[in-house]
Length: 211
Image (cartoon, rainbow, N blue to C red; front, side):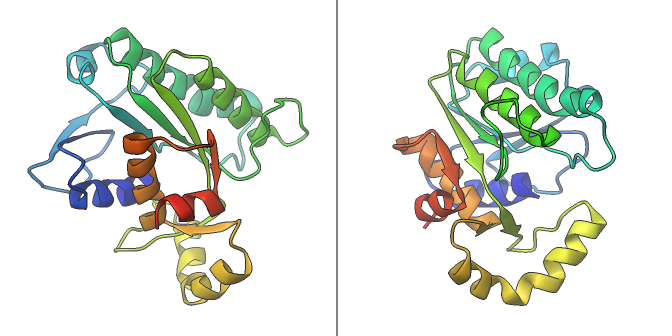
């Protein structure tokens, strides 16, 4: 959902010359800026490395819910998978700005009681230790999908649809927890192009950067 929103903003932004979309299924977007590559294994980027060497930025928006998952399985699809993509970029000779979409409540200490927050924190810390041009960590809370973007998780989409009408009120009442796919996408582009004073952006900073 976040990746789809970010892609729409990239298409509209003059600072973005081209977008390489990497996924398992076709994104359904045909545009002169877009080159799409479908991969079966997100741990193997060998065939893709020649396409990565000129990347200026990576928007890593892939993520799964931890519901029903043990820590080992969640670590594999969160920490290990993210690091595989990050190292592939570096191995290809790219030194882009890496923007990682994490989540509100992520535990930077890696020792808290909440499993998903520990794993996300471990992933963030590992990315910060890599020699990218810059690393920025996005920690949105509630994200309202806009511009026709929909969640691939049916239960989440029902929730977003039900609360969509309340979004303006929620944003006024909870500015530090509420954002939308347009703001996230625009903030990703702005941070990649201009930098940002903070490495970690919560919903409040995302909304400010994406305004």
